[in-house]
Length: 79
Image 1 (spheres, rainbow, N blue to C red):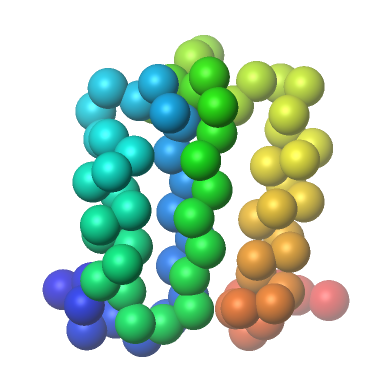
Image 2: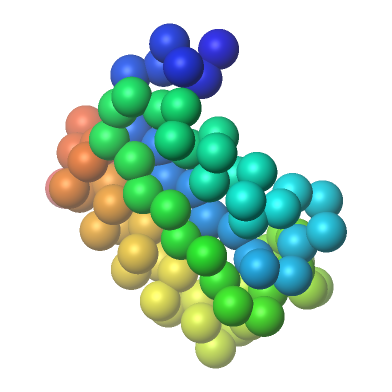
């Protein structure tokens, strides 16, 4: 189904994720035909809550997501 999707896709994955490999997620993103961005987080596991995005990097995470939305999915951003 993702091959038919034409909207923007932002995919982030931790390089320590044991549920979804970086390689598999890159292959998935390669099949997307719309605007896309891939963000690999070094030293991060699966999920945000306890083993995912370190709190110190949450600001970077927020900025990266907002930047993607503004540039590739502007209809998703309220101003």
